[in-house]
Length: 367
Image (cartoon, rainbow, N blue to C red):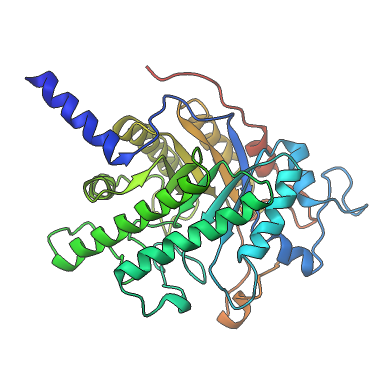
């Protein structure tokens, strides 16, 4: 009888939830970077230099990082942001360059006109008056539009995110969720959110049948059994779990030290792989720019995750930012520059980036 119960539970996991059971990640260890701001930075005249020749001739940023070991690029897509950056055309331009440089590609679809994250999941302006069925179709059409644009250029992304940092759902208020599942409106939100991810999943597979579909949440250290159980119970689909990891942000991390955060993240990655039978990707990581301790923090984290079988790799978020540069959309908001890049004030990749790009998957299997 116990064996029958186990089989039933296993079949349930396979049929809803992680659809790409694997004991090891597809391809080699991903050593990547989200460089979605790169085209805007280049437009603004920002230059990038080889570590040994600062002040000499500038280098192409993608080629510079490729030469250091980068093998994957992550690119975000907004629906229709007012500045015109990070839209489909901008993403496609960077994807062409990345593909030419031999990079594996992850597409991060936000389903918003601006940054989507745990505090912001704003419905695109053009979709504001949609009911649920129409919103589902919008998710489908947008996913198809983005991925078909790549296909038409002969570019085959390896991964696609359906939403960005969505522990609280997406397309609010329609797809807003929480762990308080007793609330009727939240239950409805789970139905909607899982429906959006399922629709995005199926649309992605329609264009690229073997693409790896990622559901992405923040706080790699935080155990969120309730989230994955509710996603599973409501019919959500995914092939890989994506996590963000910013271990030095103690204000975000409940005052915990980076040592605690790295250790908890390691434990959580192992638990997610075990419980959901799918690989985990560190889709975002960031350290404080030019803080000497950042090198220690990154080295510690890399040492922990490269020996975890089915941890698929790591992407630094916008490492190329330096010198106080900020994107156009930050200026009217009064936001300062991003201070977690991994380039020096001279426009060279920092030691933090060298540590990340020198990492190799150890090909060790967990017992």
